[in-house]
Image (cartoon, rainbow, N blue to C red; front, side):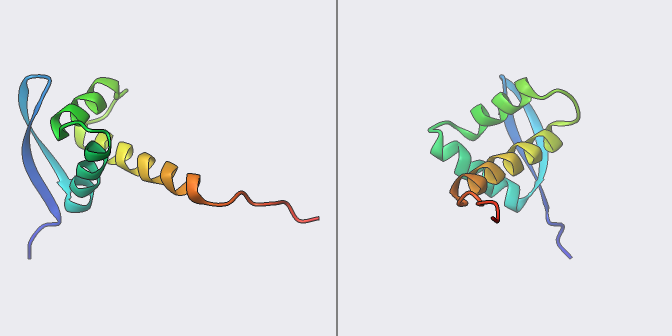
Length: 83
């Protein structure tokens, strides 16, 4: 059975590194970098430089989750309290 985690090499701040992510996160990263008109390496470099702790793969997952969560919240109508 094929693992859902995909390991890819990427250059971050001039250094080659390997990152293991599920395909859904790689797809999310590609979408975000395209919308921001930046390369995948540039986006990963941005995430890497701003992470507080943990490994790079975890930081990327949290970034992608937060990005799409924020987008989902932006399109939801505000809930009006019951009267």
